Image 1: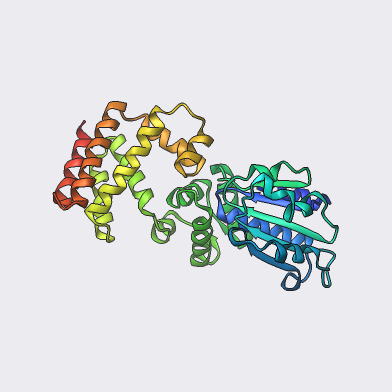
Image 2: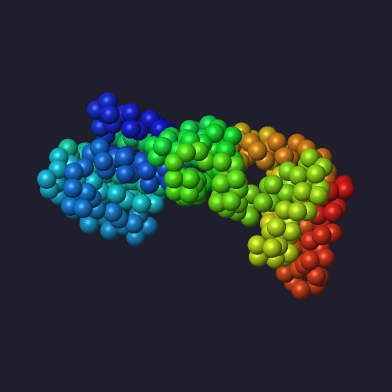
Amino acid sequence: MVFTELKKSLNSGERFSVYLIEGTDAYFRSLAVETLKNALVSEPSLNVSTFDGENLNQGDALTSLSAFPILSERRMTIIKEYYPKADALKSGIGEFIVSPNEQSVLVIVNEGNSEPLKKFKSVCVVSCGAADSALIVRWIKATATASDVKISDALAETVAEYCRYDMTRIKGETEKLIAYVGGGEITEEAVNLLVSRDAEYKIYEMTDFIAKRKFDLAVKVVFDMLDKGETPARIISAVYNYFRRLLFVAISDKPNAETAALLGIKEYAVKKTKEQAAAFKIRALKNAVDRLGDSDYFVKSGKADADELMWINLFKIMTE
């Protein structure tokens, strides 16, 4: 099931002895764990034990799984980043997965994929991959409404874009906006004043202005980055990596989800990147990547001036 279905499943009375929470969004993974704690365990301080999967002591984990709950119907054992091979599951933790006891629930929390764990019928997989734009907008609006604050769909989308759809950042920035307005409505001025635009968003913004032939605004973004402490060398490196992504997306025929996994970005970011890439000729993207790659090497090896190469590359991208 996807993360948004977990609470509904629990409210309906559905219960599993093993939950595999996996996906790239750290915020949703954390929220899924808290949802399970609230629904399944009383007195978490007494009935929840957490282990590191990379250095897992099977004996300690099994002791936790076999312990009796205190003032609670069940106790919970959490293992983070646990990627066992199929053979390793023939004993130890695998024995509990095959024959779980009613007093314990095992929660495995992984950023990546673990196919061996999914082969057990007792395991409920909760997918916490990147949320789509519509879900994030609904989340921002619902969070604001809970504090008697209003925000429009457009501004909620802007907050998500500024944070590059990272839910951990979105949560923090939304809470900051709510505290700032203290009731009433979040305005565009408040969003522009308070929500930090990370370097990746600024590169995205600059590229978008170039694609739309708004070169004066693209240059303004670069000056803003320099004013905020970014160096020409870092800007060259960031633009190089971003245009490599544009080129990859432009020539790839893979589905958005697969492309996102390969690039290590959110699926919705792939959609936006494809829209940007379509504004450039593939040859122009290839030329930009080649020049930027050479410039990145020359700057890092001390063979050229970073500021000069930064502007030369940007103007060539604008005029090609």
